[in-house]
Every structure is written in C-alpha cells, then in structure tokens.
View 1 (cartoon, helix red, strand yellow):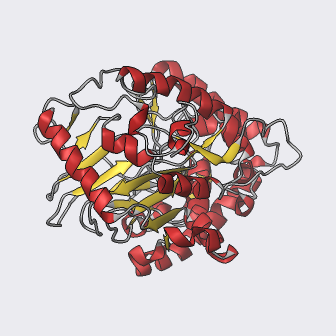
View 2 (cartoon, rainbow, N blue to C red):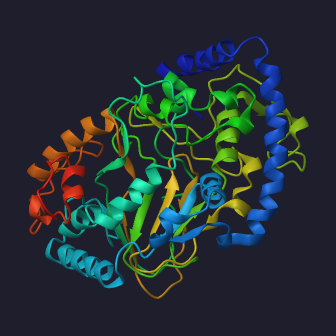
Length: 436
C-alpha cells in the first residue's frame, strides 16, 4: 500500500500501537497464529476448488425457520448463502422489464460503462422501492440479521436501541449486465470498511481474538463490537457508513456460473484471520518463488506503513483488495468460486467481511440482472442514517453514502404508496402504515 504523505506516519505508528496494546508477547503469539492460518488455508483450498459452486449453501425461503443448528453453523462459517424463491419469478422479471423501460425513457441516467450502461447509479425507481419493501425480502433480512449474536449478554447498555428482528432499508443500485466480457472493475475485495478495520478501535475489537493469537475463537457474528464500529472514518463517497450484516442482491433473471455472477471466498473466519494479520508480516523470498507459501519464509515486521490491499482513494482509503501477490496464501485463483445458478426471485447474501468479486466475462445468452439489497438491522447508527436517507427519497436525490446528485428523473418514485408493506414503510423511516 502506498500512502499519502500525511497518512504514512500515522499508519506506521498504528502498527506499533496495535502491537503494544496486545502486550509484550504479541509477536510470539501472532507468529504462531500466522503459521496455523497458512496451514489451514492450504487444507481448505483443496476442498473449495474441488467442490466449486456446490460449496455454497442453498436454502429455500420457506425453510428458513426450520434449518438445523448444524446447517446454520455451516452458513455462518462459509459466510454466503443462496436463498431461493424469495419473490415470485414473474414479479422479479416484471421488475427487470420495468427498469429497462425506465432506462429507455431516461437515457441520460448515470451509469457505466458510459458508452453501454449496464450498472446504474439509480436508487429510487419504483421497482427498487417495491423490492426493498417486499415482505419476503424483509423477512429474509430479519433471518440473516439474527445469525448474529450478542457476544456479551451482560452488556445491556450496548444493546439499547438494537433490534435484529426489525430490518431497515439501505438504498443501493442495480445492474443489467449484457453478455460479453471485460468487466474488470470488481476484482476480489471486501466492502464495509478499509483501513478502519485496524484504525478504528471499535472496529478493530471485532478481531480481538485474531490479534490475540486465538484466531479459531474469532466469531464474525459477534454483535457488540460491530454496533460502534466506524467503517467510514474518511467519509469517502461510495463507502457504506451503516452496519450491514450481509450484503446481497435479488436476481431478476437467470444467472449461472460464467454468466457474470458473484464470486466469493467461502470461509469468512479464515479470510478475516489472514487479512487482519497480513500487515504484520513480510515475505523473505520473492513473490514468484516456489517457497512463497511456506510460513518459514515470512517474518514479523511492524516497521512500515504498508497495509497490503489497502489503497489511498478520494482522501481516504479503499480495500481490502487482496490479490495473488499481496495475499498469496488465499490462493484466489482456486478459492474464489462462483455462486450457484439462480432464478428470478432468488437472492444471494454474503457476510459483510466476505471477500467477493464479479466474474469478468458473461458467456450466457441473457442479461444478468440484479438489484443490490443488503440486510440491515435496527441500531442507533443505522436509524440515524435512515432518517437522512428518508429525506433523500422524498427529495429525489442520492442517498447520503453516495456521491451527491439528483435522482429527479421521469417516473422516479417519491411516494410512500410505492412501498409494498407496513414493514417496508417502517424500514424506510416513514412511519408505520396501518395495514398492508
């Protein structure tokens, strides 16, 4: 990571502060942990690469309430799940057709690529507003939120204003991707916080077990520290400032592997452990050496400002963006697997720490169309964001986390009547309707 001059000293000191805060044995126990994690990654890689998309759990919306504890633990560890039949196929396809008509009527809407728009920076079209407020979408979000758990039951004050069973709405965009290649804008990355994972003390505490050497005890679903974690210290546009338990999208078309779908690293515990410890180690051999994967060829080092995979951007930082070079033990060429085939009305959700990407090529015959809809619980921080977002909806402007701009296009939604349920009205901060 190259850093702006005004950040270099800060980040150099940050590593030393972290090391000091975990005691004099920090080097000893994270070096041991580093070796264990690398060994575990080598074992998991073989299983992931052999199973491919079959590694990703698939469940039906109707069975969410009856899944066994073992199945829930599997979903938690992998960090990604396909939930099928959340919305009726015809309704999902109708949303896609409506969006296409909207774009046809408003050819100047923002999106990219500029000469052939397929990713649209739109937030308040009627199909998006309807989909986010669909009772089944909100029920799926509630189920996902409740995969998290109170990691400190005695901490009642921390949990004030928190309700995992009352979802909130986070307005995001959609894509209608045409067959073809060249989508290189979404390589493997992690959203929901960049350098903040180390720099913000509350966010860093989410990874205390990793930084204490007890990486196997790390719980990506421990709720308490997440509630105060600041994921956007530099207020960079397109950096989510809310706590999303899971990112996600709703399919409006059939999309299978090789057809421009999502790819994930399917072990959120291991990827967290490796990414969080990576800045404290440097290789002793060249990156193209046959021995680069041997933990003996890595050394503890806190002398630099380098946080691999973190990059300066827009006055803040982007990433983590792991690569084969910066994070070789993740073996991303073998472990980034495509999610299974989805049908219109299916959803895909991935934990907020999951490494994910988008396939570069779309070899299918049909447009690959999805609306981005994450799972967002009620927390004081999230409620405050929704209050600001509500005003953006009513004024037809971009939501707070995104670049400033108007959404005042022909046919844009700005009325409560477009929301499909009382829960959806509440999730938008618009008050609770008397009936659905």
